[in-house]
Length: 269
Image (cartoon, rainbow, N blue to C red; front, top):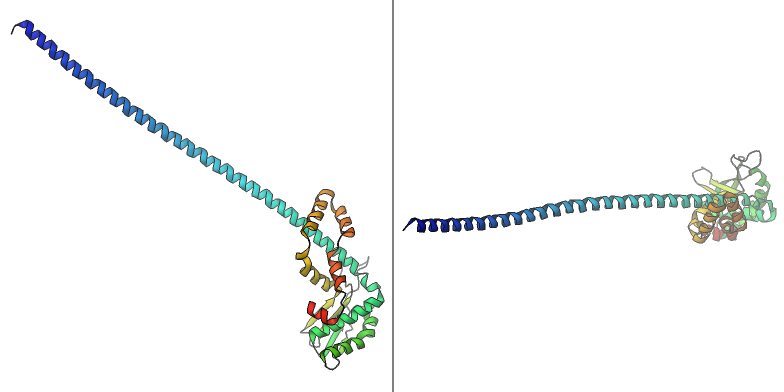
């Protein structure tokens, strides 16, 4: 083999080695490119995921803050409505208390009312001897109906007539300009056992409290909404006018009972 053939073989081997090297380099380059793209895609997706999670967290925080603000505003509105309703009820009760003062001015009807109240109190106590306390202005009316009240009580329970002692200590007088904020009583009686352990308060003011406790859940929702809107839109003066011209729950309930008979009063209380 001459030098020319050897040179050709060497060149052929060099080309083969170079081709192999180039192919290997291409494979390495392609593999590296693929790995780079995969790694880059993974990093991009990881960062996207972090960004999405961060925005989701911030969005949840915004939603939570909105819910908290809405809840606070809703609670504040409810408190305002409840306050307005409470003011309404107090205004109704105040108006009813003032109207109660007119009950004792009609002496004929008030005299019959006192008798029924005494009979009802006796039916509740069922004591052979009781103490009776009333306003100083009502002593003469109470004395005039004691006998008929004892007779009615004895007839109903088929017992002897009880002993009723009118106490020298009287209930507070009705409110006046000089004593507007002191203790007062609109009328009625208080009976107690001789030992003072059992007391039955049957004054008009006590009956008004009972009526309000019993009838307050029956106040129509529409009426409350009406007066609440009137309170918010036009103030307390319009609320008072509405109470005067509208349905007065307490006085209605008190007048509706009218104490028609001691038996019905006994079952109602």
